[in-house]
Length: 87
Image (cartoon, rainbow, N blue to C red; front, side):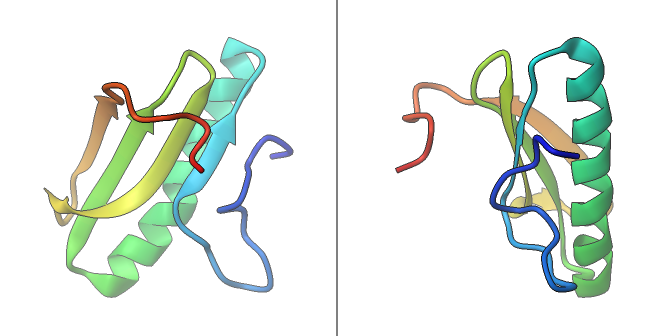
């Protein structure tokens, strides 16, 4: 998963949000699935919130735990004008 950014698993921890950047549709699908699986592990342990996948552009996504998403749910949204990449 070379395209996973700052949220990539390091030293047994998952830093959120997980950033996914892809150059092909196949890579995007694989990396998004892997990122959601990583974040799901953390969300299930906490047992309080769901997962939010945000599309920032055609190739840039973030995956995070969100208190706005019910536990057990994965929601997908498109960013509406937020600066990308994040500052």
